[in-house]
Amino acid sequence: MKNIAASIAISTLAATGVEAREDTMTRIAPAAVYEVAPGLGQFTDEVLFGDVWKRGELAPRDRSLVTVAALVSTGRTAQIGAHVGRALDNGVQPGEIGELITHLAFYSGWPNAMSAVAETKKVFDERKIGPVADSDAARIELEAAAEAARTATVDANVAPTAPILAELTNRVLFGDLWRRPDLSARDRSLVTMAALIAIGQPEQLPFHANRAMDNGLTRAEAAEVPAHLGFYAGWPRAMSAVPVLQKVFAAREEKAAEPPAAELQIVRADPNGGDAGPEAYFSGQVRVATRYQGDAPARISGATVSFAAGARTAWHTHPLGQTLYIVSGKGWVQKEGGPIEEVRPGDVVWIPPQLRHWHGASATEPMVHFAVAEAQDGNVVTWLEKVTDEQYRAGPVAAR
Image 1: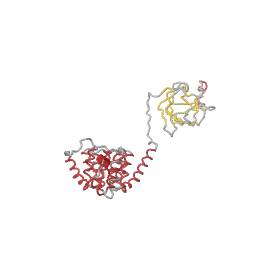
Image 2: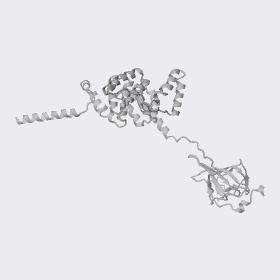
Image 3: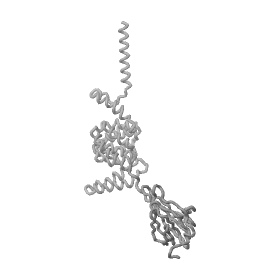
Image 4: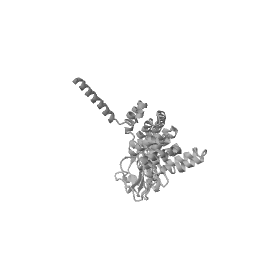
């Protein structure tokens, strides 16, 4: 008898333990689902809500936006109420839910939006949420260059066939709806992506996926959208979105790898600016101004050099040569072993690589020239000994 009583007690405790475990399990799927399709119940609780909804690649608030967008755009009114409530719990504001429905009226049709309003109103009434008012925040400013390109595309491809559709697209859809502050630009892009995938419109996805990422959606978040929608729109539509996103990601990576666009640079003239020419490399009063350096892969650099009368450079060479443009005054230039040559405004002097030479002002007049040279292994000039007064006083042949 004692053994029988002990067995009954152990069985009772075991049964109580099982019931306790079942009671602690949080079931999302209704009991009817387990009664009719137990596998569906298990996938709902263990995979959809036990795994997917907990993934960090999309925040719970974003997952609610994606889910409600999918349900509204596909007209799944029976499921809207529960997910609107979940969205509110996940931090989506009532005004944002109303604006999501407004936004998707343009992307999935007015009938779906009106049906969603009716179901959402029931949830708002249950939660004692009063009437929603338009936001009084400043309207969203769209990126001007992107809008100009989009408008041009609509005008070129839509207007010739459907002019009123083109006009409404530019004036109402993007000129008004997308600028409303009731839903952020990022969230508008997110729900638009979700709706396009859910209703099987992948051909519209490249533009909006790029727009979403330009509006702040990360690549990981964008990639998570079809994974989430596999459960709400079905695997075929989720899979159809993958090659489209793959091309979008690849194009953005390629663009990101491109060197930055070249920027026009202006070095402004400053009559009182510049630096004195180093005494080790110049004789007399010399000033070097408006220095510039080209960006790689260019190797060019230059400056404006002003010489007082009698001032000149030391002997020097350039690994890849040098060009001088005479701006004003009268100058002298000489290669080693050659005569001193006189130069005047408008003259251009080319000095070949590694040629020993000097240049400067004449003995009686100042001279300004613009000097241009290229670097080789980071070197532009090799300075040598100074030009002696005797060498300089020799002057041009014509002046003797």
